[in-house]
Image (cartoon, rainbow, N blue to C red; front, side):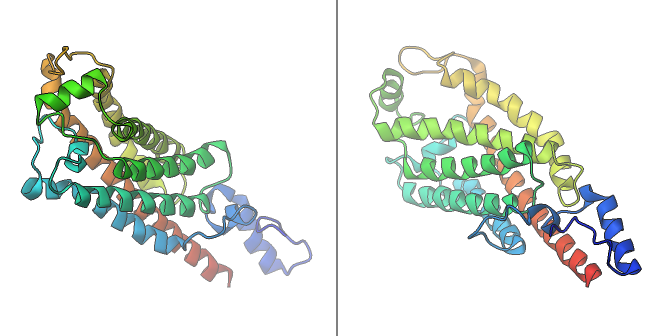
Length: 277
């Protein structure tokens, strides 16, 4: 029997309690929504919430760029930290790969607590896309840091780079698209659900900012403002390293928010179980 069904043969007190739960179905997260579609091999909601906070901490490895990085924070992409010609590239690759795996774990936990429906389903799937893309970004490092040498910038402009270099750029794009999609489908569409109101408030500011910062990065990716030697000619491109770092820090905040939302849902689940006992 579904947890939303009411037994008419129950005691009056039980009928009253069950009727109260049924009168506000949108307020019941967790068990009420996931009884018929719980995914197997997923962590407990509380555990996934803490892993979300760990994931956010790992994905904020930009802080290590200040003492350890060799590239310009103003003009260089963050991906250049893990380029194969950089001395600490394996460290930054490990951060990306580990963060990506934890994102997938968070997404599987979200699948068991969000309401059924096309929007919420694509929401947690987009978090999986973000995690898989991030893992592949770490697994496919750039050949070289194009902001460091003219030869690398020229090779990139002319397409004389390896398939791993191209793959890294492709999955960097899919990671951004997945991030934006998850912010909208989880943060904005589920903002009125208990446990997800923090996500709604966060994406109210973070989502428009990420979209605005995508504009110069997309133009650069399409080749606008770049001459034949790979040198940027538009003034706005002199700060694309700053744009991307703001985006990544907003992504770090989003991962932390998802972790906090899962912890909140876990507390709501435990409270509902105590009330039903």
